[in-house]
Image (tube, rainbow, N blue to C red):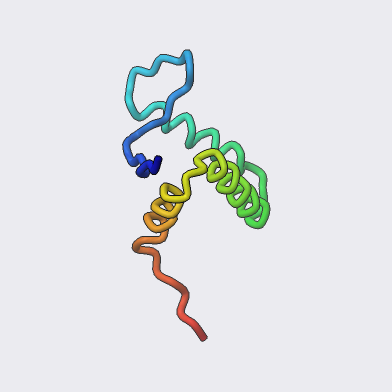
Length: 82
């Protein structure tokens, strides 16, 4: 069964009640910032790469992952070739 990429807000935490729809996303963003605090640029890039691979494995559906990759790449200019 092929799924589609969910672009609607989908952050939640079991047992936690939120009063605003955006609050769980804010919680994730804060956790992400905290994860990178104190790291060098190279260490931060490594953490991002590891996080992407862990979450991609969790998603597992190649159709969804390709859709996400294409969407993430959209409107990002490629470096000019020398």
